Image (cartoon, rainbow, N blue to C red):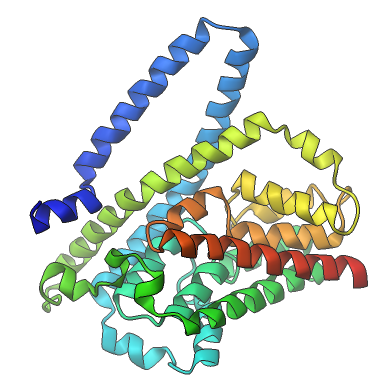
Length: 339
């Protein structure tokens, strides 16, 4: 296999992806026609699945597209020297900067993945990227305003942002002990100049903008496959496990937290609107479980954990799920016990 063929195999072109997507849609249409002739209950469940899947997918696509556009702009307009001057190399400061970087790149959990990958290709230190990946879906102006609109200025708003920053900072700091080639997939480690064989030469602004949109389009199609699979898994779980069953068990300082964190993982609601969904749980769930829902869900859900596979090795993706899960659980239980 030639080098070019290997690259095409590892990173399918948009045309190849569209062919696969079209094949999947045809298969989906066939399944619909088969189910339509079957049991009424099965047909209803399938319709529920399709409705939930489309709701998650349509909600997430604009944010993935926005993140991909930002990724393209970073690829063309941000150089490694500027990034090196902006980001500290001292581990503690680096992880702290990463946990606050969402105010510079305000993206949700769908858009943050392509942006993080592009920043790594520009030479971003490993702990900064990890902290940014986990914190940015919450620690940005849009989510700050939406959470304030839902809960006002109070313990939920403060707890959501404080715990998110602390958890992202702590996990990012842990990754100062690792090397990039141990954590990142090879495609995410190679600097952008090496991938294309040259650095971006100075071009007119219009041409550079077009180049940025082209790069962003490639990123969008590359990450969309993970979004589709993640949305399908989330829709399947919501169809098989009724939400009412989960909510009926939501009592106690520990059980309520676990249930709402599982629900956040399954629902895969965008962080820009999840505060309004959490508001509907206030009357039946503990304050700690509400905070656990608002902290853990944006960091890790089904669709974003699938998208992590486009940047990190599988073992690292598991760590990026379990570490925020454990730390969010501890923080939420402490809120229930002491407040």
